[in-house]
Length: 110
Figure 1 (cartoon, rainbow, N blue to C red):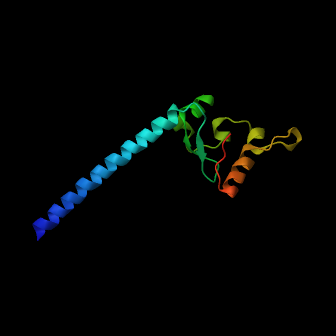
Figure 2 (figure 1 turned 30 degrees about the vertical axis):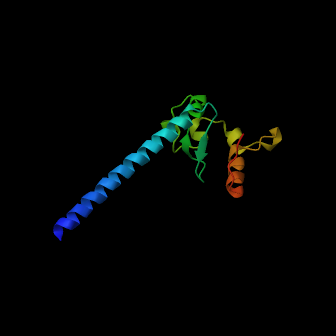
């Protein structure tokens, strides 16, 4: 009985390792596609912090992708009036746009 349990556990571990390897390969493939795209790709959380940025977007900010993760627009050097807006200049503000995207639950494509 113990031998069967051990064999089942080993088989489950092998299957788990294969699944993890496959998942990691898919993650790398998606990351390569995202970074190979010359268009800017970014994802923010509800606090306006970047959770994903591609290489083109990071380079436009003179940063590395990994250095942008967890920061908001202000943290990556975007001017305050572009982030918060300035109605007198007709600037709506990035965060207002972000909030509208969340409210609509529909990604924005520019």
